[in-house]
Length: 323
Image (cartoon, rainbow, N blue to C red):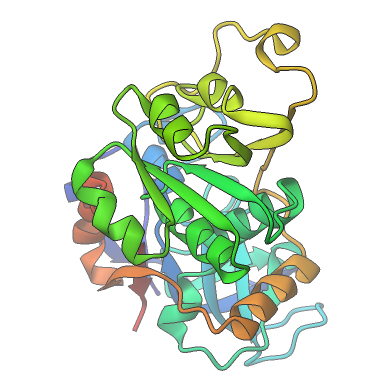
């Protein structure tokens, strides 16, 4: 089969497709014929520097998500030809992932999908919408009456969260670092766009003097303490992303940094379930949502796909199709 295989950390230009043996099926695992997959920044990090870490065993086929059909159901409850999505749980890091025509995956990371959506649209959903949907509805308990700030809204997860939040008609304020991205966010339904130029709190208070009651924090530690200060009493902030230059806190005192009566939660996407995937696809169907796709590439065009991801100008999910 054709696959992208990492032998070492490398640039986007060094990614190549080659022929490798088809994986051998084993108990507890199923062979999936990959139809397509979305790109994720964690794959960029793996390729750029993480592949040299001691916990990554090379060579490795990257890719943390895919959509496709069961090619060999092994000893599982799946049937051959069944439509499935797969994501996370070590995919593309602890074991070979989706940058290939076939993927051998643990049954617990594979989920049936009952949808007639085309493969391209399906490929844009698993990881991005799992993250956005769970952050909003599980962690933030988002309701129609809420006023939500999405910090880092032009990221693919931010755009999906914007789409999902507006599908239930709550008020959304969306932030971006670039003035030229205002039109993009307004086009996707943002009620207000804030330019993150150093005075975002002042901009927000001009619009909402009582500030907001929900924050989806996608920038991460670089802005999280400021975002916490924008919440009303009993407001909730969900830490989901680390788009900013700061990946962790050198010092963080939760007693002093979190105001009384403000709640901090987080979302970690390593534990999808069949129920949550069913909920996501039901929500998409009920609200007639179209996944936000930037551009579609073939497996042979992986260099161009990764270069687009590196540019931070995708404005939607980058999708790769295997055929």
